[in-house]
Length: 262
Image (cartoon, helix red, strand yellow):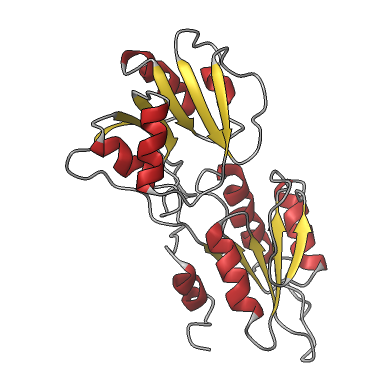
């Protein structure tokens, strides 16, 4: 019987199993290192190319998009990928959707790795919102000097706010359009609570705006804001595709791949 069109290509016994990691996060980097350390495994990390200097990665690296679901499915077949791990940013909604659909079309097992979301604690003054546009709507009533840490591609949502001074922090320079009153800080985490507290004082910040990225690298600003009794506008994460359950860490991804023990 010929193979189903959606079946992954048969692989000769001599070929190492090939795992594709959709990366760009700390967790993706750690997963690539863990996989590359396993004898007999081939790991490729794919980066979208938005960061000019992504740093060294274990295993093979490709940079650039796939051309949507069909392009990714074709790449999975052509490169004889045996498992796919989506370890992209929690807000990379379209990449996750493409990954899940392409994996389903090819019959390749897929794992979605997402660091846990942040949760508010006693003393936090969080204002959860569903989108960047909603964050912009909420902002003028909460403060006039905002620390904005939503990434370099989302400033257009705030471009119409002429009466708010923005301190924008991102890894690389943001793309226009931007608000008219902007001070840019280029920095990469991890950050410390003491450092974040000093930044809030120095720039007289009275409101913080962030995406719910999760993880420890950029969580210090939340503690510093709580200690200073500042409001924080938190953009909630987009939902995962229907039926998808994410794992929270590298160990969970390895277990889902059947590689929980070396």
